[in-house]
Image (cartoon, rainbow, N blue to C red; front, side):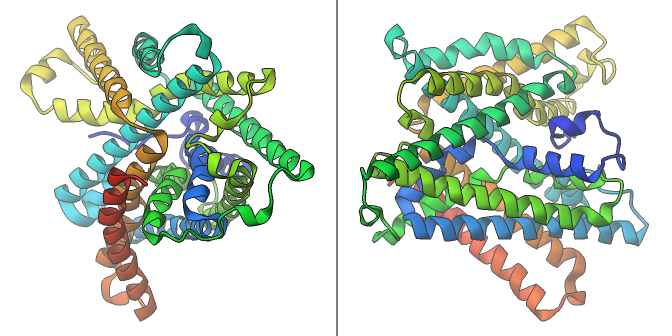
Length: 418
């Protein structure tokens, strides 16, 4: 079956060899993604106070649920009857059987596809804003990516693409810096008053929409077990995870707040679209797009593995693949065709998505909530059962109930729009 995606820096590591500093870097790289550039829009929807509290709550809950996954694996390992659960899918299988594996891997598949579509949306819209005089539409820019991504998907070693992921994160930081600079400039010139910004939205129905976008920002949940197993001293993982989440959550709140303060009701669902057409902002946008073009194959890698793992159940597919290395020429061609179909399908879906914000909220409200909150709490209840304290049971039940309700209503809210 498919494996969970390993973050770029982890690609070259063996289990148990990662230093504290490298693990901290891996956590940050795996958590921070393009969703952060939609946070100012979420603050516009929810209000700056509700947005700040919401992002903080999502960050704390994500951290807690990541620890639950580690505890569940440690529980299984202590029993000694089973091999260590290496992936989220393995943990689902050990906890809920084959149904748990199928459910977990299906959710990961949809989550990764959602992230890949978000990449396409981001690239297409930013390129259109930079080169708006060339006459090409968003759809045209998106379909230009198909041959490039099909070619990159044929690269077997993800480590060859690792620098681009770091490059994209550097561009993310630069984009965040430019937005903060814009906010400071607006404040210094007195172009807005603090009272003009919404504190808490008067329409409570909008909060789940903003909440879905906040959940979408905390990527990399399925990487928790890989991150923890990469450490030399696993006992230090909770402390490093807490340190990383404190820093990331603080920056998320600061960036969402500053972005909304800078642009107010004109804040776009991708805040870089608010930037003026200057040489600096255009360079950052193009840099972000280039980084995401080369990071896209990493995002869809687990999707390819899961889909091809399912296909290997069929005799005709097994015949085309003499071994795991796709040694037959026909097998390699079949793999490339399968990946080309996937890339094309994702681009087609992206071209039908109305807006980045609505899509990010939909993925965050549906798939991400289930992966990040509902499943970890369910696994924890299942494995520990009566040994849990009453408050731990109550907290797990709250996570399962509230997460499930939020998934249903948040999905509806994202589909209906704001």
